[in-house]
Length: 266
Image (cartoon, rainbow, N blue to C red; front, side, top):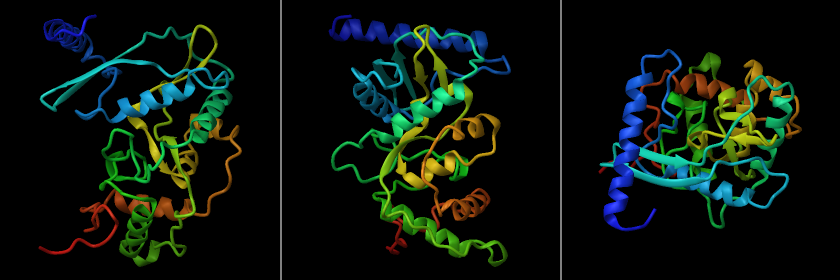
């Protein structure tokens, strides 16, 4: 494809048309979903590109789909074109063990230099099961900010179910975390390599969040967790109680700003 505006416009129009036709043909199926649904920015695109570059040439790395093209329309719908990967059919008997190795590799990746805020590399809110509707209510600007937020949440939890232990995160690293452990977000290609998919759910979060994701009792997550040797986490019980509260609380921002401090009235 050349880079002239005319060719670009034609190329993008063809992608939009193909996606629309696919949706018309399949949207009534019970298990239909778009290949990728993201906000109209390059949120997961930047994360996926970074992880892809880290995986290139690393024989121990999982396979990361290469992003070939990305664009959006009026900040309402985004389109991402990725390489085609041929997967072998599931079930794969050792899939949990393979996924555990892939998640360990992802967790060990260094964050980009000077990166201190949470979420996807392109900017925007982090996604995680702890938050209401799986989306962080604030753009936390540091680990300290999210720690202040969670400890403020503790004070709002009803007394009879309020956690005793405070949240402590500031000693932790920001690690790449896959927050959606659905089996469909992993696969084995026709060369036998484990693949990581759905980077809309991957972002930088404190280590406790990665550990919290793996504390789920869902069968697949529990099977993967058996093959991980991540350190224990003293925050898990408190995070669980905070999550239950946040999912029913009317104002998940708790009246705080992105630094986790009370908003100053104007």
